[in-house]
Image (cartoon, rainbow, N blue to C red; front, side, top):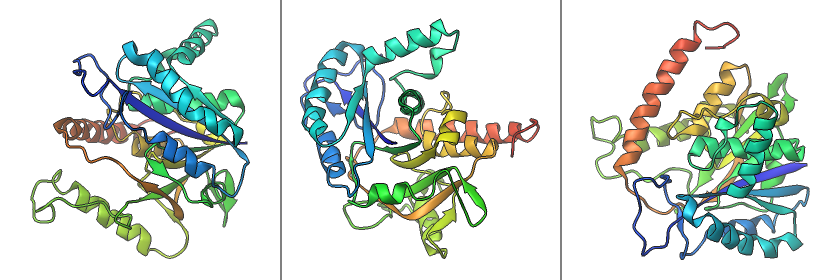
Amino acid sequence: MITIVIPTYWGRRMTDEDKPSDSVFDHPTPLDGSDTLTRCLSSLAKMHTDNFQVVVITATVCKEINQEVMEKVEEIISPFKRGFPVLQFAASDLEVVKSRLEFLDLNPDFFNLKSYPDIRNCQLLVPCILGTELIVAIDDDEVVPPDFLEKAGSFAGRTVNGTRIDGVAGFYYYKWGTYRVKEPPRARTSKNLFDRKSVLQNESYDLFMSKPGRLIETSITLGGNMVFSRELFYSVPFDPRIPRGEDIDYMINSRMLGFKWMMDKELRVDHFPPHTVSSRKLQEDVIRFVYEKRKVELSQSLPGIEA
């Protein structure tokens, strides 16, 4: 069975003020706002295959709204249960799982619903409990094409041309009709590396797309279009210390442990992220790049780790 996992992030009502203790997500849906999850689930209902189940991972910015959000998400997913199996994993379910882990003398600290990497770890844990063979990770602000799952299940966990493929990454396509992200004014002329981030992304995507063949080795993964084989998600967790960019960081961790990632140029989703601007993203980018650089440096001296 293939499990499609979808994190959905929710915030306070639009009239309520954020608090310093709130979890920070890029664009959580306001409790009284228009959701994107319905559109995403509707696209799943149009896929050519029904050999899948869906797990919606519900995260909130604060525990005060947990119950309301859980009820809201349940209301959203309920009509889709007539078409395919879909369940919600929310804060109350997490407490049950953490109690069980503690009973088994296992560390529950890798799992919470407050940060991106720990939410992603829940995306791995729940399918493990369900006995999943393959995890397909998407986000709730996406729409998938009808043949998406057929393509997503083509390579992960298989050997292709003598190469074992453990994880597969796909592309985002945007409403302007391309995989390329929009570049801010002066991004191409700026001397500041972080101002040039979108340019560097596009140059990398162009390079991948220019290579021959459908499958290419990749140094990039996108969290809303990733496929994990059973061997991979049983062996490699997300690093809970990474503040953002947990998708690429996971690929780095996987490769250190000998797992192989490839990019499938035909595996695409349509991505509709809201426009957001935040200095916190820049701060977290700086932290994660320094952290990952040091991680790779340290890995070179550790036995059993591929640098």
